[in-house]
Image (cartoon, rainbow, N blue to C red; front, side, top):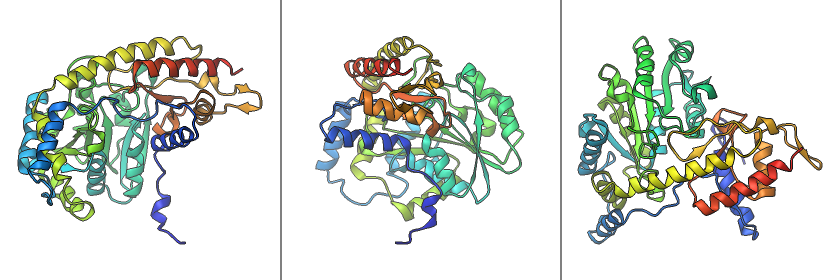
Length: 396
């Protein structure tokens, strides 16, 4: 069968690949502990579930507006005003089927063939692949563990050219957990002022999982706000991954362009989810805060256990629910006839020997690292880390 050559432009997400391999081994009766997927292990808060149930009873079973229900778009504006001190109107908001679709919409609406898109490493695996699908040119900027994997103004300026159309980043960052301060964002904004053609995607999906204080958005700087596209959604902060709802806050021209694309792909997001989203965005944040408290405890324990493994180097995460250790000290080591050449080999070794799924850092643009999620119970984390430690110490 001859399929589209478009399929050769991008790769399967490594995160989903590892999760799939883990499920296959689990189906064989092997006890796999999953530390690969970025999914909270909490259930959706009760007040949101009640709203979702009510939506079913109220017969929200029909087509929705492509851009989202007007009162949901207003709820997004309310949330942005309350939490981020950002002023937007309904015309600035587009609701999509997950933040991943929001990202795809924006990239497809902005990037032309041959346009340069600057992405600091490490980055979420889908960023580069969506750009490739849009036939843009990915320009990766290697950041350093010494700067907690955050791009500096100097590194940014060296990467931007007259061909640059878009800059993409996340704060808190998946996979590094890096969180940009207001002062750090100000330094980047000073560079963006020199390049008025560059749009900025600010992925803020991990906003509520923050261990260092107030979340800061680059959209707060008024003179570049029209070029900033804020991406957010329900999955991480409200434990609603399966409900699939994301949104953008952007200039109306970008919103209309994304709406035009979405109208051909999926139309509007699910009606019931949209009704529940209003309650999530405007209702009680206590469950989200409680989740963050638990993630804080798990982070501390994960770091403690990782630091006990010789040769592992860590930039402590300030947000999200991942650690992203440098594990290159184990490259070249062996067990029997098995040689660990790189992070890919180490992840497969940990999966098949320790029965713990992780993700290679190569997928995120940092081949000396692996990503380990602590979005699992404390007991599972401790058992998984005991297995990982034993397996790594067996390499020589």
